[in-house]
Length: 173
Image (cartoon, rainbow, N blue to C red; front, side):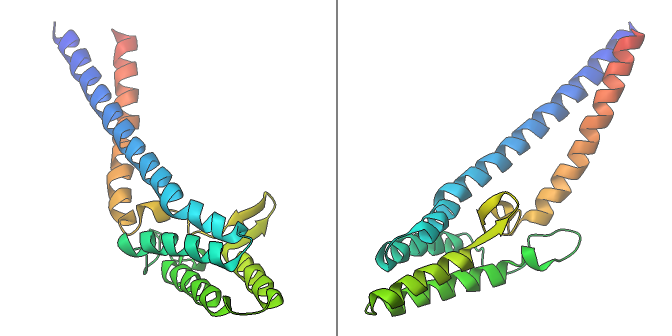
């Protein structure tokens, strides 16, 4: 009887830790999707735009999201800072792109084309996988990256331990 109670208790701990992990992972995924829909997608459209007017419209939507969600300062990193995770630089660069687009609206076709190319180069990177947006890693969880880490690391550890204990006890039963 005592072993059955321990097994049930371990099963409940395993189930609760698994559910908590899945819920928090789903929240992170949803935040990432929302960022892509409300900011990343607009930045991609800005980089792909054929006219400064279209690019300006799209970059304005992205900046509205960035400013509304306080994605203007700090770093997305948790343990150490690297410049590819510098949110303030990323934000200022996008603001500068918007200013360039605003200033070229009355320019010649050549000036507009040059600004569009400059904006595209500022918003994208070329790597081994092709062209991708320049976005700091983990931006969808910013400015709460440290909080997410403090929640997810112990939860993941607890999930691993509870899983091991549950299946070891199950095997012994």
